[in-house]
Amino acid sequence: MTPAPARLLLRDLAQLATPAGTGAPLRGSALGDVEVLEDAYVLCAGDAIEAVGRMRDLPALDGIVRELDCRGLCAIPGLVDCHTHAAFGGDRVDEFSLRAGGASYEELHAAGGGILSTVRATRSAGEAGLLAAVELHRSWMLREGTTTFEAKSGYGLDRDTELASLRAIREAGGIPTWLGAHAVPPEFTAADAYLDFALAEVLPEAARLAEAADVFLERGAFDAAQARRYLEACRDAGLALRLHGDQFTESGAIPLAVELAARSVDHLEATGDDGIRMLAASDVVGVLLPASALFLDRPLPPARALVDAGAAVALATDFNPGSAFCESLPLVCSLAATQLHLSPAEALAACTVNAAHVVGRGRGVEGEGRGEGTHGLVLERLVDPRPRRLHLEPELVHALRVLVQLGQVGGLALGR
Ligand code: NIG
Ligand code: FE
Image (cartoon, rainbow, N blue to C red; front, top):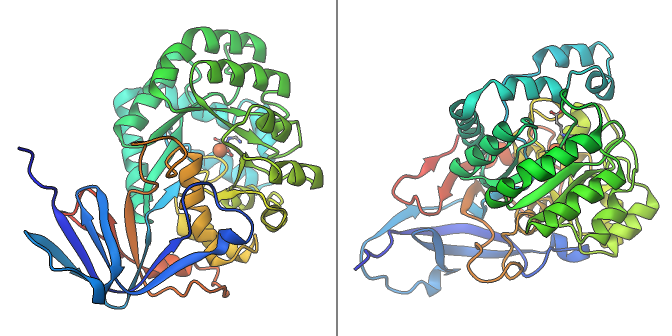
């Protein structure tokens, strides 16, 4: 007989705040619709939430139940980072200085630096080194309340390193995305020749390791025809589809994402009114990455206009060594409030429920047994979910107190 899972009771919570509904990504006014239960409990059993309710309705519990006194605390779902590039070697410290001196991200990329310099470091890291890197980055994310993370390959761009990256992400507990079309590696002169190789030699095994495929559709990377070819092949191999699009130019990412029923199109800093309308009329989630826009001194994505037009949006860090060396979703939430003009409640939904849908962990979208949206709870000092001004220094970071990882109730990770 299998032993009953360990149970943990979070008792006397001042609030339990959860974005409403999980059947589909939240959009429009529903995005800010946070349900708040006061004087609440959460009963965790193993890696699942068994029950939630008001303290006054707490039934008598049989068996061994650990208890955590949560007076003065607010519980929110564990955060879901749906867009990271956590599998990389080396760093981009020199590039950071060059950019501070005026060099642009695109110029550095065109000169063989940028992404390609991380490709060199990642190829020489070895699989054990890559696993150590993803585990380190995961530990940073966890400290910030991220209990579910997606991570992309895309810094190998050869067979061995791409597959090693995907294995490392899986082994570290991440949700792997094959970003086989991130850049054209130096051993190929033409993007199409590289795609011939990647689709023939890497895709068959990548499709077994990854859950989704992603492409950097941009001037200087892959054009719309190349992105279409890559994505259609990946879709036929069973992968869900994502796109990096409209980061610097509108090059056809949104129409392609809509046509191919991609899960998301990410970045959107260059998206104009037509793109906003098209995305809003579709089921594709727009993933906003404000840390990356600020890090590169680029315009911010039209977040408010997207939400007001009815688009489903998610928030993510874009954690990577070049354009966004930032693993903190609480910081991203704070930027969302101060720079993107989303309310704190909208930001919370965007990096929990909606982000879960982007990675196929939203309830009810991927069929039974594909996960329950989030894998933990973050307990904070009481956070009032009504719209209010956040300090640029993120209130959520200061508020983060205790991280409960479901399935690890024997070992609570204590926050700062
Ligand atoms: O999402 N824009 C493409 N890819 C990443 C950055 C990768 C890098 O600079 O290393 C992004 O910003
Ligand atoms: Fe990215």
